[in-house]
Image (tube, rainbow, N blue to C red; front, side, top):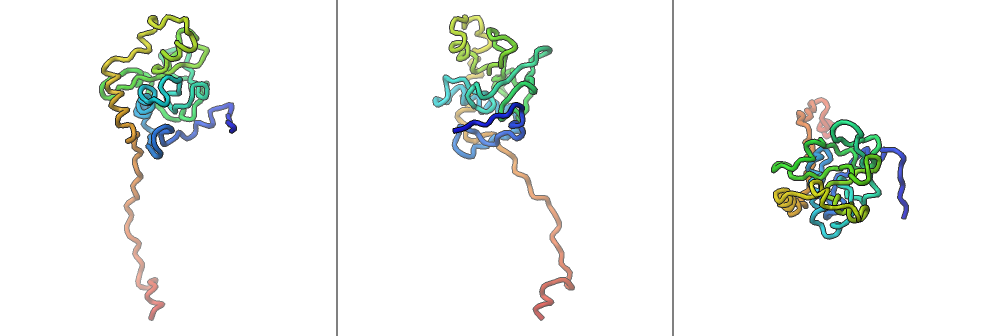
Length: 195
């Protein structure tokens, strides 16, 4: 088995259009970043096959395969030029995605690990406790509770997303353009050859 890697983000040209974990053909619309985040986050929280592992929140690859870096200055934002992930083309607004609200309950975004520092890859919020326990086992979990703990409302809403996950994030079908029917004149009709 071989893994082919590029030194740049060229692999992020086209985002996957189906969930890599759900039954085949569960659609994920790469143009709807927040619902894709929520779908994958539901796997992180409730899927027994991957729960308790550190996975990429955007594509569900094991953590070392994908790296998200945060910009060093300004409000929290992903540094696309330093990050790598096959789903990097899926866009979302960080400030909106970071807040759990009833219409968009998922708050799973990459955050800098307070113990690692800003030079290291960010950790997805829903993986933060796992990261602390496995990478920084002596770090006080309680100190970082505000980062990794989910509210009861967010947990309940994410459970509902998990229970309907096989619907995926629908990809709208392109409609055939409405064109006028092709009109063939009597002079060009094949009926003339039958006479």
